[in-house]
Image (cartoon, rainbow, N blue to C red; front, side, top):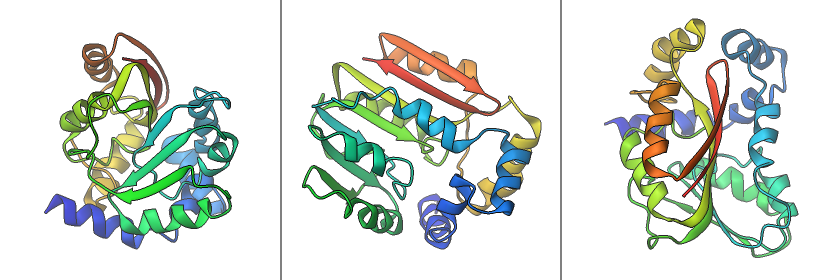
Length: 219
C-alpha cells in the first residue's frame, strides 16, 4: 500500500532527513544545488516570515517532520497554541526531542492523517504545511481537509514541490524520490495549484523558484 511505503521511507530516512534539508554536508549541498537549485534554509525563512512573532492564536503544523526549520520559530511564538501532526511516528519522535528545548506546554505533537483530521471545522487561525503536499497520496482530500479546519479570515501557509518548472528536478522526483516513497504523485503545475487554491481561498499570494512554491492564502 502507498501508506506503508511512505511510512517505511520516512522511517528509513529519519537519520539523514535533517542533513539533506539543511545541507549539513557536501553531498546534501550537491544534491540540493544540482537537482533542486533552491536553498531550503532560505525558503523556510520566507515561509515562516508569514507568521508574526506576536501571533497569539491557534496554529496547526502538518506535517511537522522533524521540526528542523520550525522549532526556533515556535520558541518565539510565546502566546500561540501549536498542534503538530505527522503521519510518521519517527518524525514526531525527532520533533518532540527538539521541542523539549522549549520550556512550555504550548506545543502538542500527535500522529495523524491529513486526509481525515480529527478537528472541528474552522478550528485554527493558521495552518502551516512545509514540504508536505508532495508526499501526500490524496492531495485533493488534503487540500479540502486543511481548508476545512482553518477559520474564516485565517491563513494557509506553506511550500512544496511543483512539476514542469525544472526538468532535472522532475526526473529525480519521478525516477528516485517517488519510487522510494518520499514523494507521491500526482503533482501539480504552478497553474494547477493556483486554480486549486483559488477555489478554496478568498485570496492567494503565491511565489515560486525553480521547482518549489511558497504561499500565503486567506480563507
